Length: 206
Image (cartoon, rainbow, N blue to C red; front, side, top):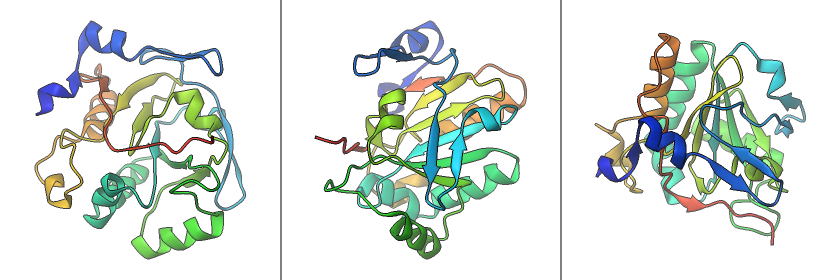
């Protein structure tokens, strides 16, 4: 199954280049990650630039998506957030569901959810107009991006190699986000810089 989703080397870099006709931007593994400014669920302004010098993870999220729930019901996403933020990684959960669309939540609703499921991202970026989603051409929830301390995008795609909604499939899965962070922190090139994302579609505005 993993072979259907994993790409490496030059093939991965080619596949990771995506044109964004709505903004004229291109997001590409190996290039600078698109800079952003967003308001979080605590009404704080967050920018990519302010975390220059740190690894940054973007996790596209939808509470009602079964593929997202898989990683929260199992505790997998919370464990990843806790592990990597303890190592200095900035972890942003991103919610891009538009008002009136499935998955849309208010900041207060999201904060209550964080408490309920014991999630510990650095912050939750509220993106109801999908500006951030369009910048990164995010397609699914969950979909993951890893940015290095120099601001370069070093991983984009699925969270792991088990594209199912079954929480039991978390055990034994190859977690691409952890792989990328472990390799990059050791000064190594990321073996698998791009994989095909899986999950529910991001609910863009009509």
